[in-house]
Image (cartoon, rainbow, N blue to C red; front, side, top):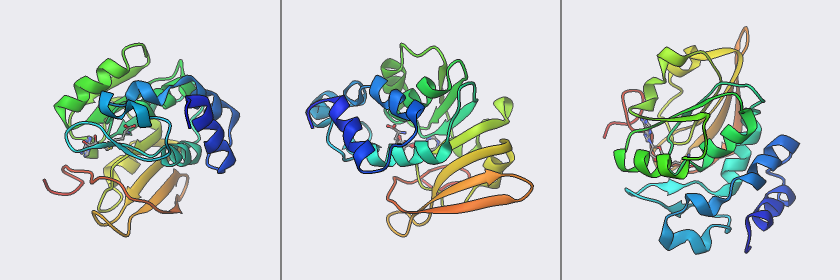
Length: 210
Ligand code: SAH
């Protein structure tokens, strides 16, 4: 695949992208702008790529599946945990604008990288810190997306969801047996298993130990 448009067509034909507004956002955000120089030539290949500090920009199919499960809407307030390159945050920002995206990253070098990549987005705030605790002062959120794997679903994040709010989060052991979970906060907390995936670990108070 040689262009962002070809990558998006692939995500539609493999069934991971479905919703009109989400497809438009994927077309607007060029993945190449979020890759490090050495990997820009592979930006339109459907695979995760190294960024900085041993972390990765997620596979496009995974970003598509997570965004579709989250179902963000125009005007929503979103929390992302694990900013990485800022690619997922940019897609969310396109969908929810004028709603706002708060995104937390624990590695300072990546905070700077993402801020640079997201400089044209007025509705994204990149925060340096431990996202496993959420962002209590800005709660409740319509959507929470965790792009690193947690040992279990942190209660503190469920508490920060609005009524009807949705959260996608990979849960499981560090390298294997991870399941991507969709949590919907209603009268009961609904939990839907979206299948097996592999993510880098969530490291922090409600994640894995360093
Ligand atoms: N969403 C990113 C993919 C990031 S990979 C993108 O679109 O490029 C997951 C990221 O989570 C890594 O950058 C890692 O440093 C970060 N991370 C891990 N534990 C964290 C925590 N407790 N708080 C915030 N970020 C965390």
